[in-house]
Image (cartoon, rainbow, N blue to C red; front, side, top):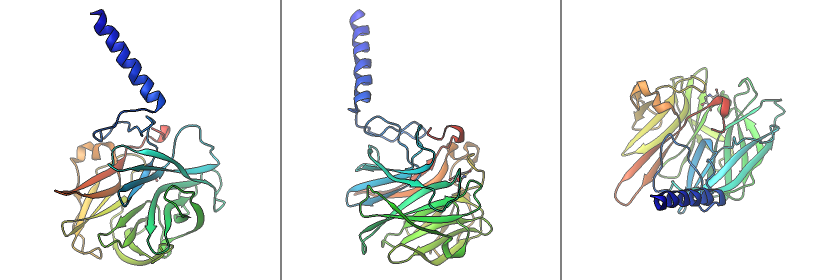
Length: 295
Ligand code: DGJ
């Protein structure tokens, strides 16, 4: 009996030691709804994020909201992985000070990074706003490397429209689009310019008032997913389909039993993983806790 207790204690001590020293076990599966540790055992901080794949490596960018950050800055973190499950922290690739003099409480949310083959630049789009969400612009920051540092270039309203939540969509042929929420009208899907430094052409306006917009192209259909406008509170997210990005788009339907409010999450991205045997789409969402945002 004593030996069993001793062995249990030893095992616990080893577990604590390995997580404290960063030698944490490889994770075999993603556990939705649980705290997700990175390879050093730290809670992943990449909220409202976006994931891209370059060769065999995935890069995950998101809002860095860990405790103790300097509140004068906004931060974007970067993680890398080859299996979408085990993630190495690559550092904060953005540490930005109020680029448009918006004042205390200014907002940088939902960063998305595109790699431009032609210019060899990594181009980050993000939602830039003042504390009352009235500015409604996208910001652009650029880097030569996936792990930064990204430097602020400019901010603007895409095609002259209000833009709050943004989403990223890269089609199977590599064409890059921005999804953005235009509060008075609905949500828009727009083509980026060839250097990705501008939003060039509107593909469509989906006249539904939704945020957290995400698109995936799967088995000949485009799927658009979004959430209702309930701030940080979860709601039943919905999807519509279309054969062409330009539409026509179907009616919206629930993606999960509505009573679960999307299991407490809000849409952020749809990731298509093309495997040898099958193709899988992952729904990536945030379970927000506005009073403890690092959580
Ligand atoms: C919902 C958005 O999706 C989030 O990114 C954030 O902007 C909150 N609203 C703020 O209330």
